[in-house]
Image 1 (cartoon, rainbow, N blue to C red):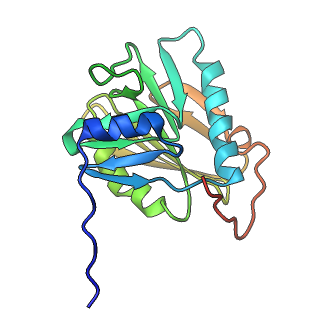
Image 2 (image 1 turned 90 degrees about the vertical axis):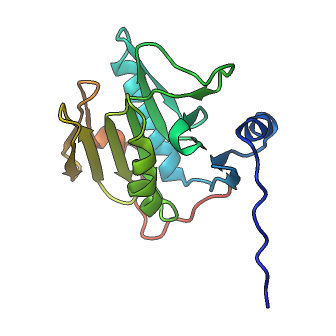
Length: 199
């Protein structure tokens, strides 16, 4: 009979110390440290396109974007993760004593991959919804012109929108800026079977 080894438990502070010296990024899941998968060329291109656009569009406004290397801490679920793109409005709130872990994004963008798309759509969205400031979630398909979006309204209900096709215009409601689908997918080459690269 095979005996499955129980994952080693780490405190949040142990995880943070390990991340400071880690060669690859890892998520923290309430005691368990999970290595993140690598991305694809399309994944990286889309993240860069969205970040560069938001960096320019938000210049002079009370909001700033971050991408992929800044950790998000979700206190209610004791989770540490690295969203593809985040935007913070106003003052940046960090975990006490940290400068590498934020708590208050208003917008999160995830570029979907084959290995994480179900988790991003369901479980991760549930975790993100526990963040009081969070009010917009954008999921970008890397294999076709397709963006899905969830927007929190004044009644705290989440509204669903979908954008499809190269001519569509995506409206980031929380930021009051729009980005064309062609800009999101600039230099992206769609392939029928794109292999994820090791990180």
